[in-house]
Length: 89
Image (cartoon, rainbow, N blue to C red; front, side):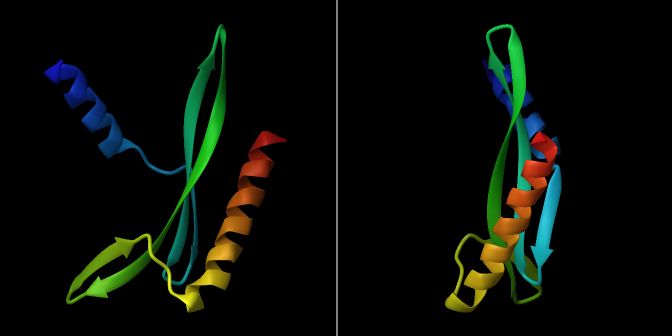
């Protein structure tokens, strides 16, 4: 059981988004997952959003957005949607 947990942890560390949309400090990361459906499998895409900020000398990410970020966030979401739509068709 400990080995399975270790394998999953290593898998999470090595995973990277298939595409990233960035506008300034706002980022949309597009992730691909394969879903097994019986004898078939298909890709499923999810998007995570973050905002980068500097805390002293260290860059950090947050999932919180201020009102000034919202239009930029919407643009990143729109671009992520267009990218995923292009993959499906």
